[in-house]
Amino acid sequence: MAIDAYSAAPSAWHHLTALRGDLIHKLQMNQKLPERSKLEERLAAVEEQLLDTPSPDLEAIALKLRLLWSAELHAHDEASRRKLALLTDLDRLTP
Image 1: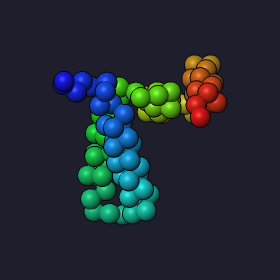
Image 2: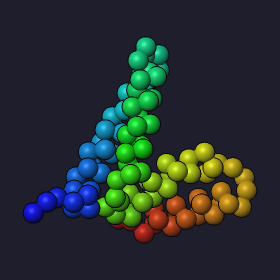
Image 3: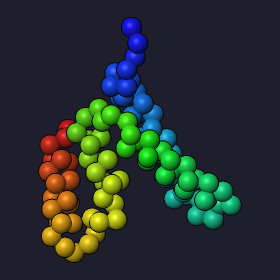
């Protein structure tokens, strides 16, 4: 039996989120690394992979929406307020 993308998704998702966390930590701890731009590029690539990976749960969907809307969540318009409210609802509904 072949493994399809949806049955492998939770494992891939957890691997990618762990890798993303490690990259964010390295960027936060080492502000002046010569390889900082490479770490930022790798983080962007991992986040793109996350967006392409099937979401295993609602928490994953919330993360995808945060990645997609990151630049818009702090604006002071109605659309941004609604997006933030939607993410708040998702956070409330996830264990």
